[in-house]
Length: 465
Image (cartoon, rainbow, N blue to C red; front, top):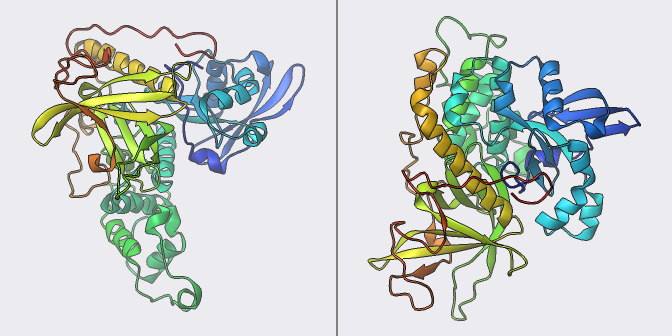
């Protein structure tokens, strides 16, 4: 695995499919189980499994599911366990990487030896981190849209994608439409939603009473806040004109609507990594400590998410940051993020220190995402958009994408919850710097319009490229 096309982090879907993907291995034949986003299984009978690469297994899955050619770009094969998740390159050999799994765990996680010995990855068919959002809604195949919808839904319900209550309700309403059909006023609809509330909303919005009071709650009882908001949003889900009015009709319209709403989340389609950051000093003794975070990296930028509170601590586009990483050989493995700030009216450079054994992977992924973005920008004038104009124009570009500006939104940065190192121009301990990205402590940053990016050269081994 190299840093350009792999990610290691904090799995969500893996926690419900922690099963081996190879059920039997002989000299020539093996049965391979590939898990989809909805936790269903695609069994494959293959020959010479140890020599098969991810591209060949990917093709076998597409053939079984009868997916169109676009699925080659949309999806990738992943090795996933509760301790680590890795997106595979087409040339990677899943069987061999599975045999090397303990080595990967020791290198990229802090898992205890007993957990490492017991951990075993499953092979999953999931969204490709490097597939641009702008191409998603040009897709017309319903099964491809369904798989994307199922994966996005799983990330929302597991709170891997932090969402404001309003957005959880709007997304949950679309799930209601997919699973229950069009909204029907009356008691049966409310009961069906109540019985499966955790299928529509994240767990923290499904809190209800317990004990005798909950047991005595009748069918006509008043819905809770999350429940009522969900029902209100459900009744507003629009049906497609001229069809899609029955439960068995095409659901593509609602899959698309779910994806379009998900695209408003700045971390949609990202890779997840686990780490810790310093807490701000508090109290008389100025005690700080560290807090666990998830670092979400996508083609659009980097977001640092509080693992416990499920809200964004810092969100940066690539144009707004510089970065570097230190390896365990130098000191503790750290990803450094540098960005512009303001300290009592004085422009400063701010440094955020993210402690993580996956710092090397994160640094490589940032670099590779920048390269892909610059390549696509150069190719953009020559591109032609396939499909009807409405499909291409329905998804705003990254520059036009609507931002969630609600007061206290979970997607807004919370710099007051971070302990950063602030340097002004007259810094004594480091070389002279200026804010606004004109210079940086680090050599790694996006050089807008200069084309000075150096391509990461991937290695064939497990080493970072």
